[in-house]
Length: 246
Ligand SMILES: Nc1ncnc2c1ncn2[C@@H]1O[C@H](COP(=O)(O)OP(=O)(O)OP(=O)(O)O)[C@@H](O)[C@H]1O
Image (spheres, rainbow, N blue to C red):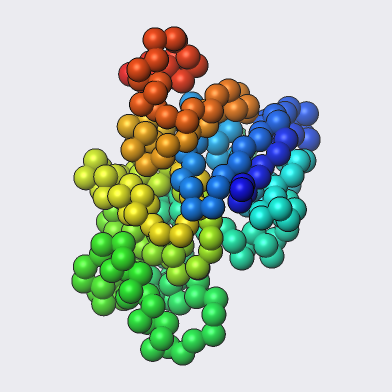
């Protein structure tokens, strides 16, 4: 059964009358990792923002987003309850005035005392492969490396205890070693439904069995297996996309 059903999402820029997303429809099963690929400006991030109801006021959103059969389009409460986000630029997600510990405490929704909160933070920081956890908790974002910050952001998404994580280019700003480690963390997450956006088709083929390809605000192709594509002799749109990246 489909867990998340996106149907006919359409985003229009009312100031320019331009349609930015056209009939975006796709489904995700519970605990599946779905990858989204596509060239720059093709509508990947906009689709995520539409799902999260984070579109700017000049953009008009239409369509349907069902979670477990229930309509949640623009339903702030349901979105906050069910979705977490991990972004490309980790630094921008952190307020420079607050320590990592303060950020992490903020994202714990359930009632718990300070000691319980601290234990939880430490647990998830370990889960994402961080060492020297006491020092990290005391740090501010500008005192950590990109790889460390990205891990903290994933730990925060896990602390939020939501079912779905949208990861928008979470590895793009990282070096190859950190990219691999972060991809590994996502791949090994248990009981999470993940929408994973990346330009990197090697990463995409590793993390997910199912990829949707965007072009000019539309889904141009859904590929169940990148390996299948590699074997294919037919020149498909995804192949052309790959060639563009070479
Ligand atoms: N707030 C906005 N107002 C008007 N147009 C927008 C807005 N946000 C995005 N767009 C336009 O929508 C299109 C899709 O943008 P989007 O950010 O989804 O691309 P993307 O596929 O995520 O690209 P990238 O890989 O470079 O991040 C682009 O043409 C962009 O200029």
